[in-house]
Length: 426
Image 1 (cartoon, rainbow, N blue to C red):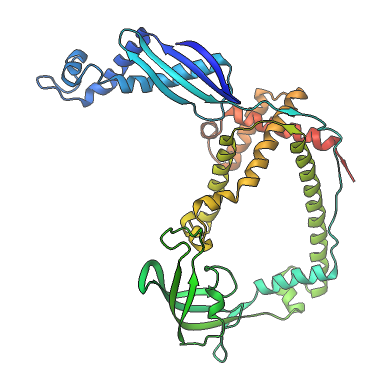
Image 2: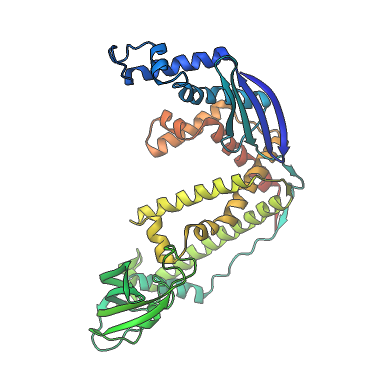
């Protein structure tokens, strides 16, 4: 492998010219032949016994070239990137510019690198901490929420639907007089006011009675996931089967005994207030630390490749999908409930992704400026902790998360401590 040139073509973007010799290419072609020969049938030869020249004569001299080049790329391109001293943030874009048996292979490799970071004034940052006052009204509101969680649904027979009721309905959606896919359900349970359906649907169920059949008209949001429905008017034909209301338990000593470890409501409220005050203190501390980190981001200068933000959004979306799966949902179902398309959904993570990426880059730079070092022993200690926590082998952890990534995480953690310890929280 030979790195012929290394040119910076724009900010954080480099173009490498790399070559592999004829000898290296021949070795790769021979290796590709050895791997493929058992799958190739050649008349007159047992499977796997046909000579390479015979196969090339039958299928063309270049029949192993693609596999050979693909096999060469990791070592050839990886070696060139290392020689050039580039720290990539994404897989490089690789183009084969020439390929001959006599002269080998030439590649053009476009690389996007981690940005240069400038940061100042990261020590002694001053921020204010505001702790929320836990009043009796706040305690009562939280007690009310506990009461509602412990309510039970009871059937209503003598009145129409009200906001907050849960109804059981059959519905079918029509557009231009024709039923559309996914618009029909029988025995569906819907809490009115939950916002589970598209805007305007739930409101039109209010005031209807059991066994009533009626039609409602809505317009799908412009960014609705199903493009054939987005922005279009639709009619839903509905039959109402049941109305249910939430019956709340009385707030008394029996309620305290049933829902907590306390014997009286006063004891329960006192404990609730204490926990709310502790949470308020923790939240205030977290908010103050977030202000510190926001200041760090403001004090950082960098031209960050867009791909780094997109990668972070990808991770956030995967985390969200994992949480949905725990609830028995998937992303397409969630998008249909919210009326968002995938682009709009990804955009909801944009601000968080930008903050995450900027803060990590800033902390990496601070760790470097402060001379923070993480030993191999410390990295292995962290890997062992993860293996123990997830009950999986150490090698499995290392196959999913590289030691270098764990080292960077630890560097950022130490840099974060340096910043927070030096901050002035008023």
